[in-house]
Length: 126
Image (cartoon, rainbow, N blue to C red; front, top):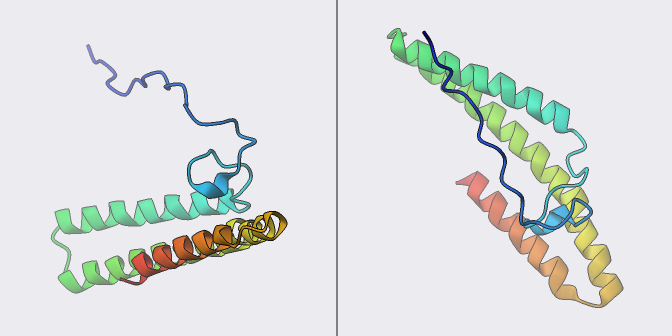
């Protein structure tokens, strides 16, 4: 008799504000921020398949250079995805912060978003 160990626990109630809240502050659920969400998810599925392939290659003792070539491909795929997400963040979150900062006379809002984006880019470039 086999038992299914993949049962899912009930989701906990989210302490976050409603979906109408702004997704750009990093503390609230998204609301149509990822216009290309389906494309991002498809790309992540391809990357996941590439990583599974890497696992298989190592398990089967494939020639090291072939494994390194596949690692380079996975790295490039992740970098491409991160560039697309960065572009979305700049177009949506940073631009929205600029509009909000101007409307409210609070220039620190745009400074915060630019600093956040700069830090994220710094992490990507390491």
